[in-house]
Image 1 (cartoon, rainbow, N blue to C red):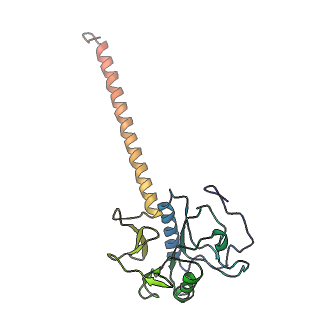
Image 2: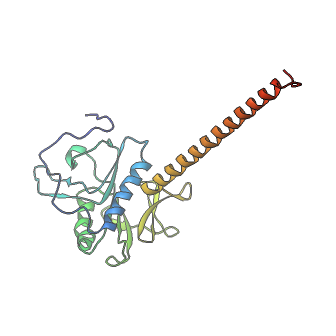
Image 3: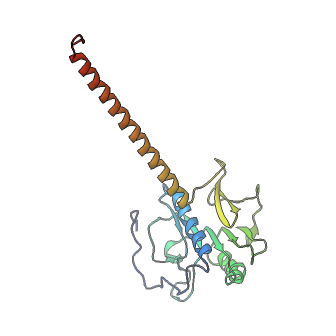
Length: 237
């Protein structure tokens, strides 16, 4: 079934929530949302790349209780319409790219349970773990790529971890995880940065319009003065 952009997946009888909070802290939540929205912006012209996160992924047909909710994931090759949940057997695609933002309560799950689940059940090709506070995960930023039978560590390139799936690099910047474009040598803008850019562009446009209006008014004033001078005795008509 082909779905138009903006469409929503039809409801099914599999859960859409596990009752757990979106993230352990404000920082983890903000990082997750920023990464998801930045990736959506990056793939905005590619309708066959699905970007999501904190969404229940069901991978055992018929078992409504078995699921996982990666913080961020990307699946090329399927429509980017909205979904209530992700049913692996219906989509026919695993989660190519996954990021987990590690916290005190999720560290063991992220490095053991999910690690094995992602490589064995969900067909994950690249798996990144990031501990924003650098308190729980050692090292605090890790990346893995699928080999023949298991994940293998991704090597850093100039302090960044490259993703073959995204065509981007990931890097720690303070307590943030940022996406970097190797073709331009620039970081992808976050939603906040995009909003600031849009605001600055609007201000520039308003200023230019104001200057244009002022110039037009000045031209009109000079035109009127010239007309008045021409009407005076001795003035040229």
